[in-house]
Length: 105
Image (cartoon, rainbow, N blue to C red; front, top):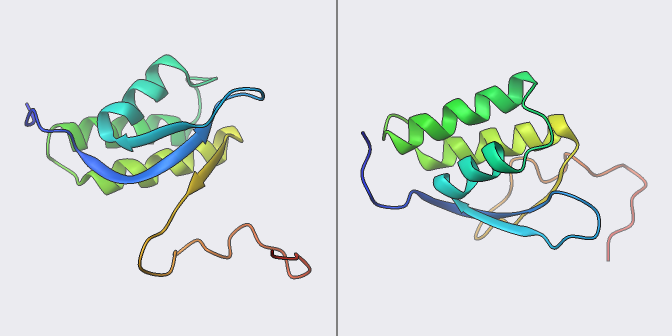
């Protein structure tokens, strides 16, 4: 089994439903709990991938960041909104949701 230390990653803020507050997810444990306890559907390939990524990270087979990435892909699949803050560098997905005519503040 993995270590008892929390497996931290850069925070995501996930909005599970309209009218709720964003939930801060910054550990593999919190990601796994979100998937198991609050995810709208247990179907979908990305959902299952995210569960496996959390399991592997908790067992120290994979890095915590892999669980974070899998969670964002599962959120995209389930059309769940999330905010990802990138510190000190460029995001690999920084232009993913931008359209050519989009206006930025």
